[in-house]
Length: 175
Image (cartoon, rainbow, N blue to C red; front, side):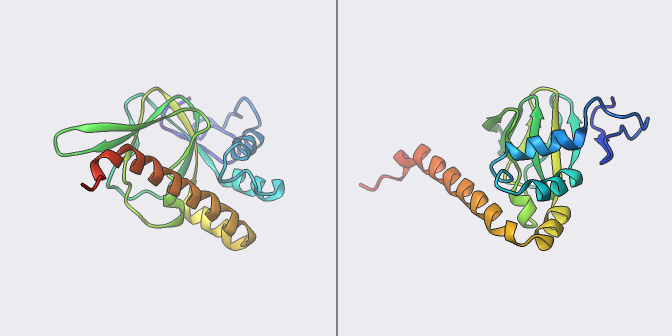
C-alpha cells in the first residue's frame, strides 16, 4: 500500500483497484460508533457517514495539518499516535498526544477556521476522515442529527477550556 494515499470509498486501493483486506465500510461504521460525536447517530444514518469517509496514512513526522492553515476535515485516529503541536516563534510545544480511537479536528467540520494547532504523526498512522462539505450535506439531509452532534462538540470545547484554565489558574490569581 502506498503511504499518504487515500483509499477510495469502494474499499479498493486507488492505484491497483485491489479489494482491501476487510469490509472497510463495516469497519468505518464501527470506528464511528466508538466516537462520542457519532455514537448516538442511528445505524442507518451512521452508514451514510461511513460511506462518505476516506482513509489516509501518514508516515512518522508528517503533518496531517499545520497550525494556522485552513483545513476542512475531521479525523478519527485508527492506528498509531498523533501529537497536537502548538508552534511559537522560536519553539514548539506538544499540547496533547492522541492514540487510536481519538476524534480530532472536529471544529473544521462546522466552520471555515484556521487550525489552532498542528497535528503531527508521532508514528506511522492511519486516519479516517470526513470533509466539511460532505458532513454538512448529511446534516442538511438529516437535520435531527445536528443537535446531537453540536451538543457533543460544545461539551468537548468546554472541557478543553476547563483544562486550560486549570493549568493556568496559578497565573491568574488576583492579589
